[in-house]
Length: 110
Length: 118
Image (cartoon, rainbow over all chains, first blue to last red; front, side, top):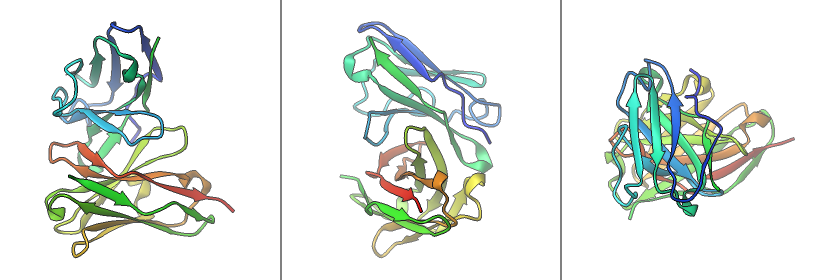
């Protein structure tokens, strides 16, 4: 099973919004509402930002939001801040084969 | 507080095996499944498998079937991941991580760097 497809890079200026896509198939993203998003700063472990497509864990700013349409999930970061610059990974449950991750998107705050 | 503390860095030769440990604390060990995820240098995250600490039943990613073994010791709340027939492409940071029961990972270990080199 291939990894989920993410754009390698995204960027925006402070205060702007940016959306990162995550494309899978009907066997993973499209088949389950179990898409999550992780933020990873250099040299650090990933941090959960969104789970079950659009839910935010306690402590995650509401500037982060998630959605899904068909086989594509999206993460939107509104009101970009310098500390949002990081790598972002999507993940989806994929049934009997377990979990899949996307290839990651490097978000740059200009 | 929930903590996952992993064993230290390892250097292994091609063809050898490596066993990484992950000691859990701050919660009931048998109440949450645990994942192993790896990340090669400069690359993305790769899911390796998950284990139910109550039953010791693992599910492995197809890519690692036959080469990975995930076990646990409930008496010490410790998780183990052994990877055999190592090759240079297995050089990576290996993370243990707790499943939140909401189909995602809520806590991660600090990572264990495994280097495969002759």
